[in-house]
Length: 344
Image 1 (spheres, rainbow, N blue to C red):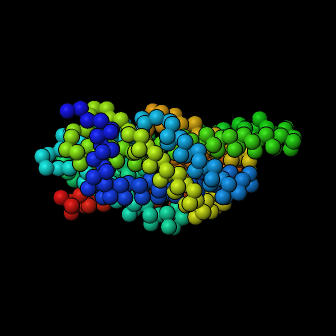
Image 2 (image 1 turned 180 degrees about the vertical axis):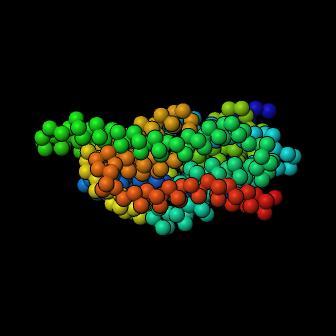
Image 3 (image 1 turned 90 degrees about the horizontal axis):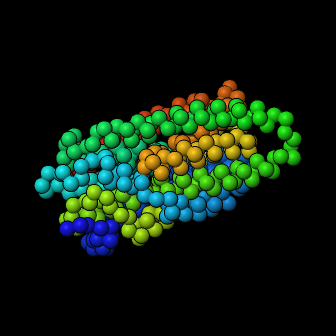
């Protein structure tokens, strides 16, 4: 029988709904809350918008981006990382979906409470692979695809840092002789880059939760996951709403860490960081790479500061962020593996 996204949506309205909807939507909300500070940091610290106005604009744009900018990231997670339909008899992908969301929440919540931009993408990907290995062993993972995705997730922050560093150096040289009368133009361009970034950010981040719900729905129905699954409209709407609600309500702690503890941000720095981050996230979203937008935002802001004057950047803060990112993937994988073993 050919399954469809609508079948999955119908099943999730039955008995297993709360068991998967609760952790998944909480994951989407916390992902938005964690990423929010990195989204608005440069715009607020440059003095262009107040924190509340920036958060409102970010939440609205993230919601629209998650609704409108495709589903390539969801397809990568649902189809190209593990052999969902090759699990041993009696194993349920539903358990892996719940474990992945729970592991990401448990690990990243601690980082969020401490004010560090913990990577929910790393945690979810680690949890996803760890949970399915607990169900079907290492052979269930499509290691070539998983390796490409994980390498991309790890390298894009470095690419963002270098690209923003070079772009900032070139931009400062190009604007060296411009008068102060051009400052309003840069402030306007900064807001435009910010809105585009939030559209791309919402699309990439919210699709991870969408994939979890769809795979869980097929599992509850007892149907195989089709070679290409569609995202039901209700899945797209509720995951987009949960992520944007997190963006709106959770920005304050990480905003202080990223926006004011790395270097002193000016409108030109912010425009450079936002534009570089937007281009990376948007291209990765259309390519289906589930990267960590919060990482990209932070690394691009760091690169913009280094391009201005690398001696004034708080590199010790960058070291703290890097240590947190490196730990997230393996620990989330182990945690989700253990959760599945306990449930099974």
